[in-house]
Image (tube, rainbow, N blue to C red; front, side):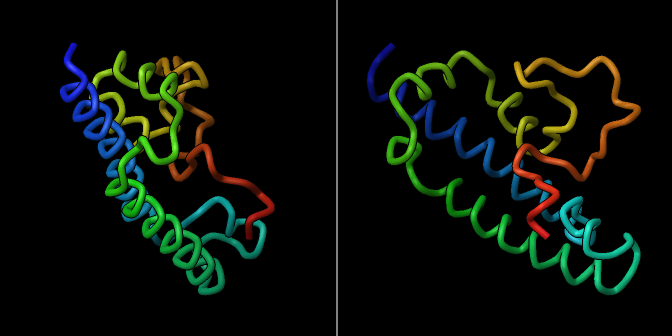
Length: 125
């Protein structure tokens, strides 16, 4: 594989992941698991906290979708990224809750919160 093609592929897949994260943040802008510890879902306080958390994440994810992944990932991480399809990278960002830590689809989604992403922490609220 040519070096130029690899660079373009890595950039595109990294952008797909982050674009998925942007869209996931916009899809659930009115609710975030981190706001659950501050107020009950459906309340004005929960909505305000959720929008604040999501706005920060969406801005961050958009920036990372644009900047070259070579600025903040190792060569090994980028090489590993090439083994996964661009569609799957998008889904890792857009619906991370559907996948386990190894990147395989979860077999049981009954108790998984679709608002969740790997960066969610109870303490962030």
